[in-house]
Length: 571
Image (cartoon, rainbow, N blue to C red; front, top):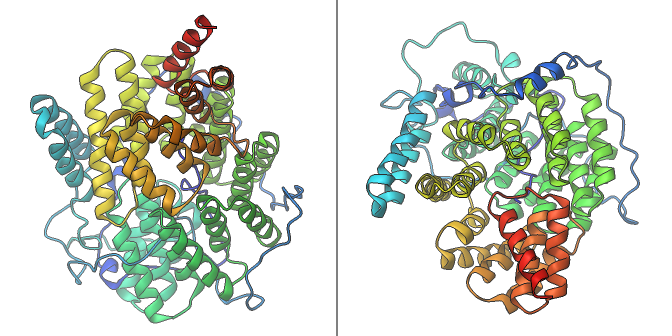
């Protein structure tokens, strides 16, 4: 399954009341209605949510260092620089620069924004158009999806002449909680209002940029990334080398999957402020996504020494999980949850615990963690998606379909689109399944148009549900950029579906070499081993996949059982 480091935890830095985006951005209303759209679909799990909600009040306390022994005998590789730079960090987001300039420097656009209901309608029209005209399916979906996601935000936010004047001050607008919950829209509106009156406030420009990055991540709207890049550019033009904007650029680069630049900007920010939480965390993310796991472990230790807290704890846990150390990962996440106070923190960490439990096939525990997340934020999309996956794996197909339809109607991202398509396909509804797969292609095209490297998404989705040749091209390109367990698995599977199993086998072995407990990786390796005549190894890895997480994929798990049955019969 795809790496989780891009679904970043909220990051709380000192002086987080500062930061911003380009002057054009300050004139604008945010394209943010999707974050406050429809509520989560109710089903039997609402009782679980209600039960957990009664336990949600937690006593705040200052997080302590993890104190977990390092994965190896490593020295901290803290970047050199002054003891501590001026200013703090800023709330959550990912990041890179280099986007196209804004169309309108006034911050105004010619039209309003689409509501969440209009976005849902656009996606439904895309599906209907595909059923009527299969040959034009992709083009129709791409156009409708682009309209749904980008209407009203071609410039950096359009402001209406009758905009309300009772806007919260910037200090309230940019608190970490606002940037990681449904109040993100309020934060952006307040920042824009503040910057119209204080256009030289470089820290607020940096914060606005981070808010746009977070909005793009949570809404699935990559059109926000060019706006974020302009915001960081404006901040640095006002105050060169300010660590907030540099850390923001690093986060933007990571969001666009440009991990080399993410590492570069994070190191630049840490030279100015060695204690920048965002830069420390993005540095760990970048090293993980570049496949430099030993360096990532050292960077996580450094971050824990300097800025212990939830954002660092979650990265630390993921580094251990990638090495197969699930026990430590769970202990660290439990510690993070015990120190969580804000709804955003609780929802994020509980969802990570749910994902960890789901990966181990413990669906009941996963559902309990997702319920904990939804008890504090009933519209937290990663928890809604995770709950639907756990429901599907548990045999609750109706609940899973309802949940995933709710998720993709608001946030049509590749992961839930593929999951929903496979659920439809496993139920025999190929037409609805193809509609979801076509929307993946539409999202990928939109993401690339806004500077996102989407090769890994393309390889994973197209190998099973699209153009196999394009899947292989994308997988090779991504492997050339970065060698990780995820890119190794994607390349192995793309080679397999293109009939190149002998070439695929070494990559399948690389994908499982770190001990990462991922059922899909083991399934892919087992299928490739069967194709290359390694029957005993194939049986071992197919059994391991189904033993670890028997519901890892609606279609993949079924194929794994069938392949294992055939292998057993041939013994």
